[in-house]
Length: 305
Image (cartoon, rainbow, N blue to C red; front, side):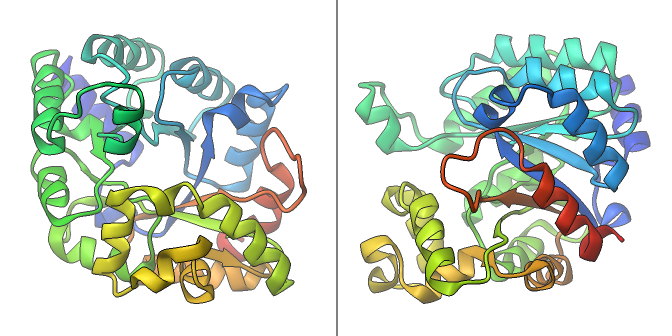
């Protein structure tokens, strides 16, 4: 199975510089689950030219079920987990999910893995094992099942996890970051690794409204040590991180404005070395649920036209 998986992955385009310039979509699993017609949304995303749908949400939900729905409804669109939390899923559950998708749709699913956050685990009263050791053990289990490095990608921000991503997966899927981080991640990974950063986007031209929405979306992440450490490596300060984030930080993390302004930020990631950039659309309407198909259409023009 391992050889077939590697062949299927190469055929379907997960890889490094050969696929640079693609645009994907990142959405939380709950937005898939609240959409009455995920299959139709996926088919439209494929017709617009998006490359990959990343299903976000660290804890067990309907990850593999939604992935199957998307893959069944499309012919070329790829699906990735962004990310599967290795503290919440057992390796056996991940292996079973990947193997089922591989049988039905060879080479079209990429397993994104992450180590979660000490703050979450302590709140649940769960021991938080060292991230690198926990990830290595999970990867060992995948190796033993024949799910090799070309079938997985790691959520990596810091130097040590980026190094592990380059050694034991196809590459890295950084989250909550900037084009400057993309450039440093590319330098750390080398030219051939797959690099797919997430970029939060908001089609709202009014600065006050956009920053208010952005701060609401960013608040949880600014309380998590691994994200704040990453921001400080990029030159942001405690003052930038405090009180919901300075304007400088908000504008760096969330690309807001009209379609072309947002597209410029995405192109900056590509210029910095990203292979794919994942558009994570923030709802501009209060209470919005389901998948943001209107925003997907609006952004397809400048990015995929």
